[in-house]
Length: 208
Image (cartoon, rainbow, N blue to C red):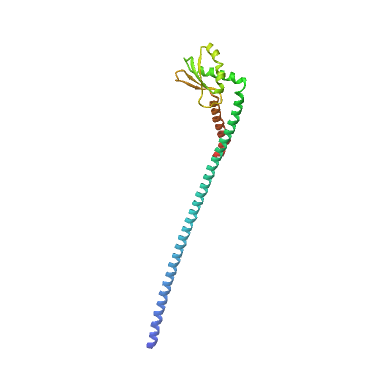
């Protein structure tokens, strides 16, 4: 028959074995929970890391686009400056040739033809005001007799504006005005040059 001590030892051994089993079970449970927490933290870290990478990418893209946009604006401004300078240089060159042209005999025939064309654009009118430069006044005075024979009467006035050549024609009642000044032709030419540059030279650069 087992002694009391043996029974006590047996009882404690059973209790300890049960406690060890429960302890091991709890430890395994804690380890599993810890593992799950670590996995969750790792996922959160990777998610936040990805967010930061995407944020940096967006920021980098925005900065890149801003730099490209700034560069394009500066390029357009430089190209427009180049266009204006080119037009100005060409116009100045044209003006020099015009001034030389206005000093020779061909200009007189040119001016007479322009004036007659101007008169024809104003219907039912035989009396006109011709406004010209001080230089051209004497030339147009020389047209008076020839025009009078055609039934046209003119009054000559000096223009308050400085004009390269040609003149302004007004009906005597001031209801109509025809601009046949060389300045008007030069302005039209400037527009044509500007349009040509935009269409054939700069358009590709501006689209980049």
